[in-house]
Length: 152
Image (cartoon, rainbow, N blue to C red; front, side, top):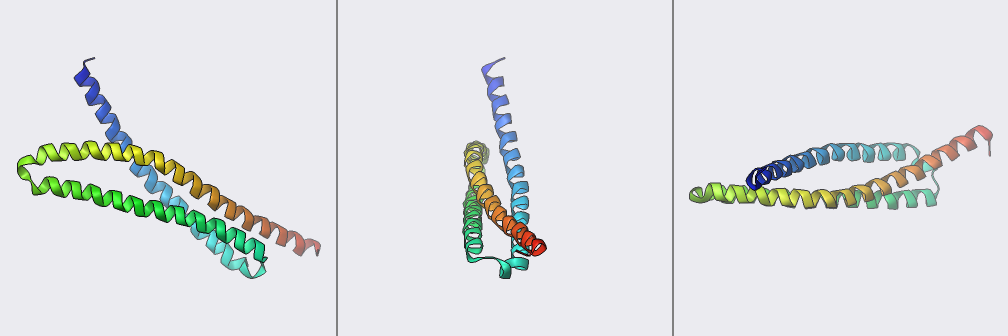
């Protein structure tokens, strides 16, 4: 295999990886958003029956989860804006369009791969804090059921 052919294959793989990352992130965001909605739906039904410790610990964890999620989305918004500006720059200079669009594509591939690594860190933090908040809420629900049926 020639070096040129290998370089082409690597570039193709980078493009596939960048595209797959974007799709995986979009799907994950929908699931996380549904989790937040579910948490708040359950919380709103039982909040009056929860202890202060349950409310505050669960609220702290879900707040951290939401903060990480929102910070990631803001960072992603900045990344997408930069990507659009790169395309706009290429369109503004028709004489250098091919050169600029190829450079833009390479830059985007590198950024997307780097973002993928950071995304995993943010994802783990968001999920751990979100699931922990839900676990606290669920344990309070189980305790409430236990108390209601056993009268303790």
